[in-house]
Amino acid sequence: MNRRTFLQESSKFSIAAGAWAAAPMANAKGFTRKSANEKIVMGAIGVNSMGNVIMNLAANQPNVEYAAICDVDANVANKRADEMLKKTGKRPIVFNDYRKMLEMKDLDAVSIGTPDHWHCLNMVDACQAGKDVYVEKPLANSIAECNVMVEATRKYGRIVQVGQQQRSGGHWQQAIKMIQDGSIGDLRKVNVWGNFNYGIGQKKVPDEAIPAGLDFDRWLGPAPTATYNQARHHGSWRFFWNYGGGLLTDWGVHLLDIALWAKNIKTAPLSASAVGGNYYAPDHDHQTFDTMGVQYQLPGYTINWEHCAGVEAGPYGRNYGLAFVGNNATLVIDRSGWEMFAEQENGKYKITPVPPNKWGKENHEEHVKNWIACMRDRKEPNCPIENGRLVALYAHLGNISLRTDSRVKYNETTADFGKNTEANALIKPIYRPPFVFPKV
Ligand SMILES: NC(=O)c1ccc[n+]([C@@H]2O[C@H](COP(=O)([O-])OP(=O)(O)OC[C@H]3O[C@@H](n4cnc5c(N)ncnc54)[C@H](O)[C@@H]3O)[C@@H](O)[C@H]2O)c1
Image (cartoon, rainbow, N blue to C red; front, side):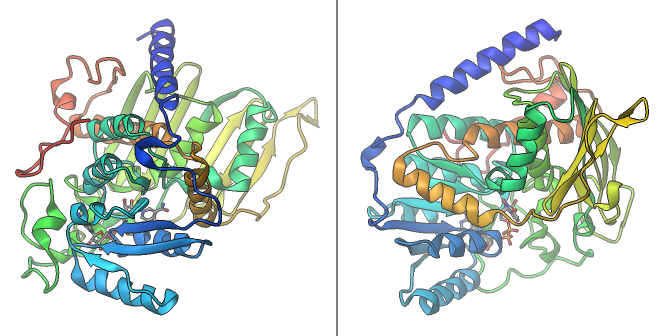
């Protein structure tokens, strides 16, 4: 695809996205605006780790009540329900099947903190049931699931916040504004990296009997049948292709999102090309790549992703971050803050360098607050579904490139990789019966 066809493709997609954005959000499916004095009633799906964080942050907000909790692990569900009873004086109803929970008429919204292979069914069903949604990142474990989730949001007019919380963070917003205002000069390239020890997964252990209280068949859901292994369960599922995409989807979506935001990118890259493999820690259980680099080619812009799982040193003394390379300066940023390395001309700085500042922080709370405010006002939240979809697409392209040993070119119009049949086979998962890929 040359630059011209790329722009045509981009504009097609932006028009489509615009049309989605114009879909009725106010009063859709009977949801009326709610003033700050009116209660929003919520349910949570998947509450072990991040789902629990989001649930608690939302429950801390005025006039928000969690009336229901669903988790396929009864130990987790009951623990969280007891904690909520202690916190609020009311014990949420506990469910094992989220579809039963969605039948609750008084539920306005759900927050989803399940493993990635479940997000699509959880979220599309919730939209169809007329609930607003906070869905954790990456949006889904495949490109096709991401696409149908965008359709569901727009068709059912729901308020959907994707859990890329940096979008609600003040220092991220400030850095994006500086870049877009031209402070660092023309931006040609961004280096993005994420080195994490946890990325090699857990030590290999033998299969075990399914723990009491865990409905493992429902945990697997649409994924292929499997034996129970502790190293592939809570938390570490993200290193197995049927459930997650490794560091590239786990951290990549947080950071690549910022790389796309800086240039207001709305569509797939011209190509994605990856190198790497599994070189490290054979005693640890993981299928996803522990060592990886991906180059995304865009018109006039290159995005360069790198990760090394099992180590935590990185460029600029940061184990993860972005370095925006502009003609006047390089801006380096992570969750803790940012700094600017200025270029020189004739012995003079082109722009005043900025030493490292530390005003960044975790942004989950702002992101949850933004979701709730948008639900009340029926407004688009800080991380709309299209942003969640786009960055998940980028992450999946990197993995697909390395899994198929090919430079991949995703066509937004035909939603495939053209003649690359191996890559096409990885676009959409085959759901295990009785689960059916959602139709919107
Ligand atoms: N935004 C962030 O910074 C951030 C950080 C960490 C994790 N996450 C995301 O949060 C999600 C959850 O990750 P985690 O680390 O908390 O995983 P986890 O394995 O600790 O928890 C997932 C929970 O979901 C439950 N579950 C599985 N299938 C279910 C179903 N069908 N219905 C109800 N419950 C179900 C499991 O029993 C488990 O309790 C992932 O998508 C992850 O990428 C986001």
